[in-house]
Image (cartoon, rainbow, N blue to C red; front, side):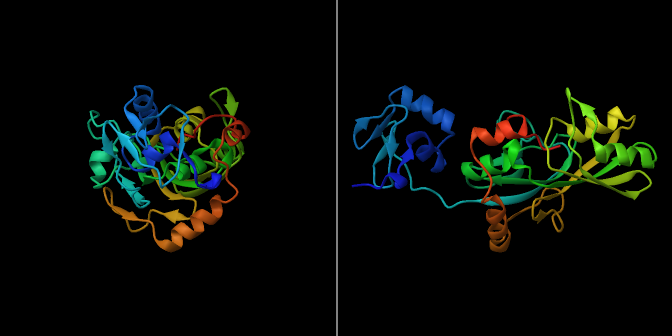
Length: 256
């Protein structure tokens, strides 16, 4: 008898092979195009690695190895998997397997972003309640003063809330570092605009334990075994459920 712990929801099983997303898999199941061991499947069916799954009459390929990439997204690239969008991140990276970004950076921003084929790690990193560090270097349109730094660090009213306290350090006359554990929509740009400044350059230089250093714009690399080990250790206490989202006060995080 198959151990219950080795069973997977059919939509996840299909998605993990890289065939399509879970949502798309549900549509295929609902339309009767998916069979498990020769029988037409229904949404919610659970399968094991020993089951034979067919989509539109063709057996699924074996589950691919997990891929974790660090990419230096240039300005002008859009963090979407929709291939009809000009300058989408999938075409920019040109990885030979199906991967997708974890979170996002605005088109006019640059810096570190992860891409993967592992949906579980996406949920753990992005749920708002998990509060993982993201570090940015930001340049604004006029000289920075102490009041600006203190207000940014203490919290700024945007989007009908007040941003959480964060670490802010001045680097030069018009440039500062900021470490966020929150991810509201266009958060840094909205915070600076509230205080009378405009962002002229925004670069993400770190996500959790992984740094951008060494990657030129447009370059990517696989995360090292040491980086993955540390990342997984940091994620051990992270939730991948809706509860983390509720604790964080919202759904999936934005990334700046």
